[in-house]
Image 1 (cartoon, protein in one colour):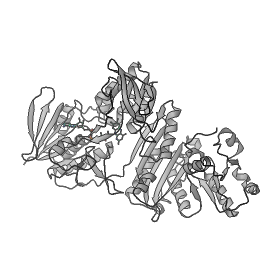
Image 2 (cartoon, helix red, strand yellow; image 1 turned 90 degrees about the horizontal axis):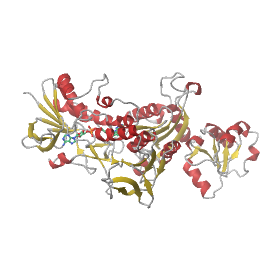
Image 3 (cartoon, helix red, strand yellow; image 1 turned 60 degrees about the horizontal axis):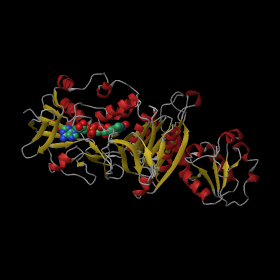
Image 4 (cartoon, protein in one colour; image 1 turned 45 degrees about the vertical axis):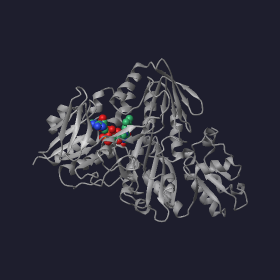
Length: 563
Ligand SMILES: Cc1cc2nc3c(=O)[nH]c(=O)nc-3n(C[C@H](O)[C@H](O)[C@H](O)COP(=O)(O)OP(=O)(O)OC[C@H]3O[C@@H](n4cnc5c(N)ncnc54)[C@H](O)[C@@H]3O)c2cc1C
């Protein structure tokens, strides 16, 4: 019997599922039903198209070999029928068909299935405020939005734009608009951008974005969009401030698009996503689902989360496609919510839990910050700041975040694999990674981060976060703070938090300058806190009992500096 497989949705998860189903069963009848005109759109590339990183719109729809994935491509190369500009209005589970509406002609059609795969994606969340329908307000969610924003970029008529939301899409669009010389303000309701990072890590990214001329307002939400003659003229914030602008991009997150599944009586989770087992099977054994429309398990916490990522959509689509075309052989177990984005010269990545997230889960964790280059200076080494989180009692790796101009992706990929393998710190401190100067330091930043954590866990140093140092200074506590760099470095750049300059090389001779009280709190740092660590060891060896190292040093300091 020829199996009929119908896929609803034709962007990321859907085509992947259909292609895998074809590779699994040469004779199945496979149909993709896609609401929009295009198929297989590379949504993740939209910000780069809008920002002018490339000009050929077809690149958003191409295979790596440059062939546009349209209806002909699917029919000829894969024997898959793709009905575009066609919306599925209803799933009839009892008689196993979907009702489709041709959006050009209005014609209705029933398409029978033996196995159905739902990949309806997600919908952008829009703040319910006055003026939301004014001209000049958009999202960046589909090809039409990408075309609209690209036109704005090319025409260069608009001078001021506001990004509503400081998540991944908000900041990627911020960069795209800044590259077109548009004045950009990013407005974020929460105290930080990029909430997948801990505050102090996100603040380093924020500082970089500001250095590129964008304005950032946190702890403030949009109250209304103001306009004249139907066109946007300003965004009004909750605190009354009005920001004049001709363009606003709403990037306040997405929600699973599970309406069809819900109406068909499939089980839906608390976050609004379709519930599936590890075979990507919904509560109906003949219906599979994949992509942004799901809730999936966070493999560390065991909780269901909405994880709208392009890589996961493809992985899940592959599993759903294979299983729908055969028996349940393939599995997708869940996510570590690994993600990355680029913003100007910085990248910001995460895998597993942040420290804030781990503490919220009630886990007993230790974190450490490592600021150091990815390669030698003569190989154009660039800074990376990594924050690693491990379980205190077992050393199990729970999460890592990395930001900076260096090769963040490699770091996050390594930590993601360590977490996937259930590795502990001990497993990675002597990891045998590839090394040559064009690629890394002899001890890669990844391993150096593990070493710092090992030193901390072994009690070789006591760390203090940049935030705790700031708090102590602001509250009038008077720890003795030592900057252990050289005078030239101090002259060029310094924190101005009441520190004393004692270069590491001079410390042994100048220990008499340290307060006599051996219980006095002493905080050491340098540019990246390697010299700060060595200074702390010298002081500890000389009897001082309360010596701390400011983790990550000046490079991880997210606050204003004196110089
Ligand atoms: C600007 C932007 C940048 C991004 N950057 C990244 C990134 O760098 N990294 C990353 O991992 N992820 C990124 N993402 C997220 C990633 O694009 C999504 O996770 C991925 O596209 C989800 O794939 P999907 O197939 O589940 O859903 P979608 O891509 O949303 O596709 C769902 C499709 O289903 C169609 N559809 C819905 N309902 C029906 C219906 N009833 N009938 C027929 N068709 C229907 C829709 O028209 C849509 O085309 C980005 C997203 C955006 C918007």
